[in-house]
Image (tube, rainbow, N blue to C red; front, top):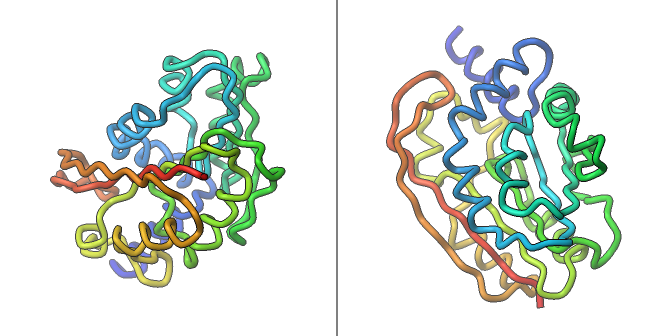
Length: 220
């Protein structure tokens, strides 16, 4: 039964659904808020930028993003229609002001934006669900403008693969060094890395000391 519960939680973490999905979305935000804010702090957002987020969850972090710079255009892509609904309700004023647009996507690795149309693309705690990160990196490179940046935040492999709710049927584990090689091979340069340790509560309510990484890569 415990393994079945872990499998269900893993699926919900990848793509929250139903009433349980709302609860999981709230849990993810509570657990990951420090990581989210640290990532936003590293984005180097400027007025007039076109900003894209892959996997925005329940969208509770957008007020913090807009506190950094009000005059940006934010676009978000999400797998979960439950999260899209939650984020839309929470950010309805930003949507009314035409500053925010949320859309549903898929897990094909394709990003439905024009070439060289985005200044800043970021994604937090989603890379575990990308079976082939290279596809997403190539698409990010395509849609980014010259000197545009891709920023990724994720829990270190050695830690996350030991969590009880992390199942190999849903999660994919990638070492930081390998991700950096992929980014470099595609053409990104000036890849910066920050490592953090944080006290937080994991997805099953356990208090943990968790290591995470932020990578930021620039397009030529």
